[in-house]
Image (cartoon, rainbow, N blue to C red; front, side, top):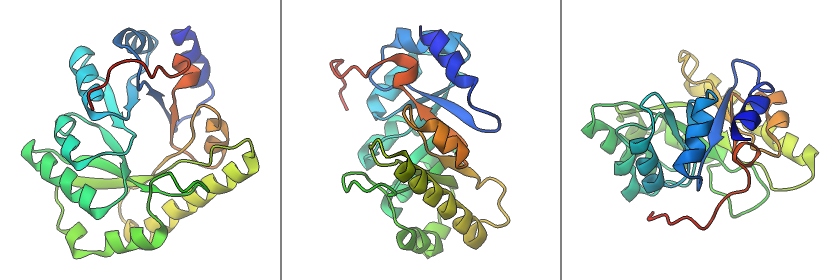
Length: 227
């Protein structure tokens, strides 16, 4: 069913938007089945779990870190991660830059914004993002590249609220593009939309949708994760 689910959802994601198979808590066998269906972008939210899966699966996979990232865990993903979606502070960005330098890499990152009504979600507001991007500390970084924004909508059945939140995130991306990245073609990504709302996210301009349960089934919380 994973292969069938993946291809069914992929058919609803028009280019240039891309589908990330969110594989957190799923066993290697499930990821392998999605890979055989054509999936090459996988999303994880635990650094050690992602490290272990990276070591066991084909090298052409793009690994996307989509969870809250602790600075002491960056070292486990810095050598191979394709995109970190969850940069919510200058301190975290500096820590990523430091680890990327050890591997001679430039790591692509997204600024995570708090767009939901729930206070429990992480993320910047626009004033914080402008302060970060305008700071001399940020300008000194050489091993990270900000390529867009990420956000999580409110967990609700009110799809109009979700749509407004996604629209807000796109406006944030557009405003930052104009103010800080006008000459930078790489700053274009909007990571928003999950299994229950990704189609609305696509309508509002998402370029990266993060779909897990609709591909792999319900999340398994029982597997051991040393993270």
